[in-house]
Image (cartoon, rainbow, N blue to C red; front, side):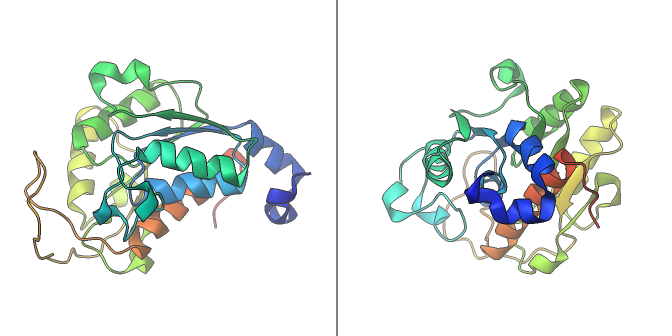
Length: 238
């Protein structure tokens, strides 16, 4: 019995905790959603984690990303989270990949995963990750847009076919349909996006910079963790 996860074991049982300890989960994207999900998976007892992100911590990440502290600015997000998780439980096997997932290099990112959490922003990369995971029969769940939204209570886990009111959901749904993929688990919000003031120039390939409030992406990350954990231990979600 691991005292670090004993409160979870009180609810889920020893067999479930053993399944989680043996599980290997990858989190692609460690920003406002993925950082919270990765740490929650560690605190839930997942024994092997692969953390993937190309970015370093910036000051503007501090309002919403778990890895973002004044002391970690400039550090790779994946490495910051690895250190946090090893401090949570030194027995967790944590692998990091500092890089961007793309179709041309996908083999560098795949391993013997039991579950994939997709928190990638770029549509082309996101769609290729989903398609590849499904081809390899690796369970995957995706986060959709949380930027410019205010009400975390609107977040829900559902089939992408049931999404609406989310521009990212619309584009991903369309691109997956072209590939013959009709069903895919996602966390999304139908809340109408707010219109943020623009205080900085958008990065290449983007028309604007989204605003973000910590409780929305953090809640999305925790919902993703819930779905993965309950799926691994085969406990139905209410």
